[in-house]
Image 1 (tube, rainbow, N blue to C red):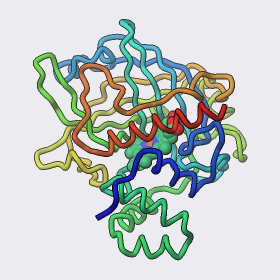
Image 2: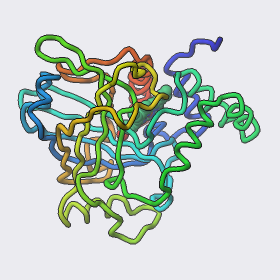
Image 3: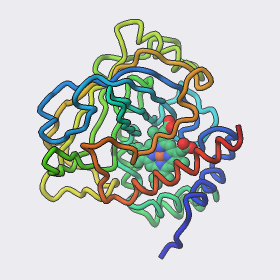
Image 4: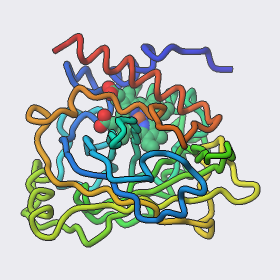
Length: 298
Ligand code: HEM
């Protein structure tokens, strides 16, 4: 059995692997801010959820990022990305989402994921031995290596909730769902790729026709694992395109408001509820400690 570790110890593990990025996030360290709006597209979602995010157009403040705690990974090498934002509805309800481009999580449990980071911090031999003992990570690597390795800008990528949530309707009925944000149009590379060009690229795409993503809900089918983020649901599950996120403006972290925001996956509006997947509570606790640590360094 693995010893129980605190959120602060988990954050220490990120620092051991990636170094201390003073004043900045210890994961998803590189990124920039955006502002935009969130607009419902399909009123039938209100039969499943009475969230105010589905009843009118809302203001959005968000952040796009590179996965991982390296201070400055290059934009011109394919990687995994994050999309996180806060929706403020017209009645001042808040709702946060944070997603990434993985299709499922490398491990079933937080403890195994943290042990995997520890192994990586201990070097290639330790990593190799750990992966050999953990078929889940082999599965994750094989699946993701087979996806296209083409370079996409942040705005050309699809982002997934990975963890399960419930939609809750007026009668209190709960429906387990996951979701993806899928680019609504072609958002290609339009600037010359270099180490730092994603901000300029998104700015150009906003000008040339706009940047937006469609929120596609995936409903659990009978027997789907709703607790385990390592287990992908079938592509045949029922899906619904329910809303659109449109980006109007992008800016660096120093110009925007996202640097000191905490995109807590449990900060959700009425009409949503967390699933019993223990990773959600773990993420929430670690992000809060992360915010405290980086604020204390600024
Ligand atoms: C055991 C699981 C996980 C751990 C330990 C973890 C850890 C972290 C940490 C330490 C941060 C930086 C927090 C801060 O200082 O504000 C972070 C940010 C982030 N995480 Fe996770 N994470 C986990 C799972 C996930 C999953 C499953 C997703 C996607 C569905 C995700 C998406 C993100 C995103 C998008 C950010 C950046 C948000 C922003 O721009 O502020 N994480 N994570």
